[in-house]
Length: 241
Ligand SMILES: Nc1ncnc2c1ncn2[C@@H]1O[C@H](COP(=O)(O)OP(=O)(O)OP(=O)(O)O)[C@@H](O)[C@H]1O
Ligand SMILES: O=C(O)c1ccc[n+]([C@@H]2O[C@H](COP(=O)([O-])O)[C@@H](O)[C@H]2O)c1
Image (cartoon, rainbow, N blue to C red):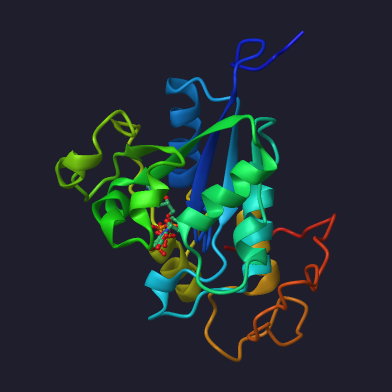
C-alpha cells in the first residue's frame, strides 16, 4: 500500500527547496510545507547551496554548518529530507545542475522547484535558465516585502511557472544573523534545534569570540568531504539566544 500522494505507477512528485539556509528559518519551512500541500507533493528535498555565487559579496557560513542546521530543522517531518548534491559539487551552485543531479537520483520523478518572490524576480539571471525550465515546474511563493509576479517570465508561461500565496512570515536569514551577532534572541524565528546549533558553534558572533565551552569559534570553512567537526551534543544545555 502506498502512503504517498502519487497514485500507483505515477511519477513521484518531489519538491525542491533550494537555499543558502544561513541559517534555515521558519519562512523556508512554511514555504515548503505549503507548496507540498497545495501541489500534492510526496516529498520535499531541501538543498543547501555549495557556493551561492550571487551572495559572494558576504561571508557565507561553512557548508557543513548550513547542511546540519537544515537536517536539524527538517528532521521531524517524515516528508522532508536534505540533499548534499550542491555542497558536494565543486564550483558555483547553479540550479540547472541541482535539477540534473536530482533527476539522475530520482529518474521517475517530477520536480517542483520552490522559490520565494525575491529569488523569482531574479531568476532570468541564473545560469542556463532556458534549460532549467525544462527540468522542473517552478513554484514562486509570496514573501513579505516583495511583489510576487511572473510577468517577466511570460515567454516561459506554458504551465512551468506557478505563483502561490502562502502564510506571510517576515523572517530572513539576514535578520537572524544580525540578531545572533548582537546577542538578541532568534527563538521562534528558527527551529529550537537550530537556535541551539547556532549557539553551540558560535555562528554569526563577531570574529574572535569563543564558544560556550571557552574554545575559539570556528572561522575557517569546514572541508567539503569531511563530516561535521563537532558531533551534535546529545544533551544540549539551555542557551541564552
Ligand atoms: N520568509 C520567507 N517567505 C517565503 N520565502 C522565503 C522566505 N525566506 C526565504 N525564502 C525563499 O527561500 C529560498 C532560500 O532563501 P535563502 O536561504 O537565501 O534565505 P533568505 O532569508 O532570503 O537569506 P538572506 O537574508 O541571507 O538573503 C529563496 O527562494 C527565498 O526567496
Ligand atoms: O542557478 C543559478 O545561477 C542560481 C543563482 C542564484 C540562486 N540560485 C538558487 O536559488 C536558490 C535560492 O538561492 P539564495 O541565494 O537566495 O539562497 C538556491 O537553490 C540557489 O542555488 C541559483
